[in-house]
Amino acid sequence: MTTWVCRAGRGGQWAPDFERGGFISIGWGLGADLTGMTRDEILKRIAEEEPGHRSRAAVPTGMLWRFIHDMHEGEVVITPDGATRELLVGSIAGPCEFRAVAAVGDHHHYRPVKWEGRYPRDRLSQRLKYSLGSVMTLFTFDGAEQALRELRSADVSLAQAEREEAEDAGAVEEIIEDTEGKGRQAIEDRL
Image (cartoon, rainbow, N blue to C red; front, side, top):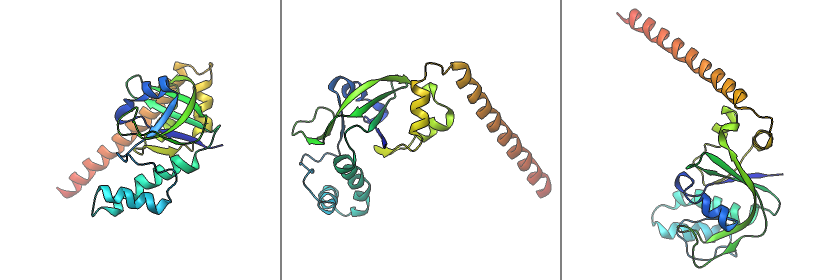
């Protein structure tokens, strides 16, 4: 089953609205109902918003298309809340709907979500935290199965997370030392 990550604005600013309202949403300032449009029609509409920048319209077009057509009821959605360092986890509860009046920002396309709860982002291993770091508004989360296991597990201890972070820090320290050594050697060789 596909797991989606849907960002709630810059830094997750609308995550509390998503949670209270039982939805996720997506925008780009298009106040038009795109649900019946073809992918090319959506691309054209977005390109019209920024004349001369058709190539920049491809990414938002793809995300809007996926939000409208590729997400399905029952699939898992994760929304990061940057203010609390928590992850909202829920499941898609229905089809995409257009709302003429935006509930958040310039978002006019919504999907109902049944929120399961909030989980501390820090329960995740560093590798999975990095996987959530995409700058895209909407994407599929390939490491979701493991991440959901870690988030939902009551047995996940902070000590385990701290050990993993220490291991990651140790690896970074080795890289730094190696790089410094190579840098010194290059300077010595140059002199």
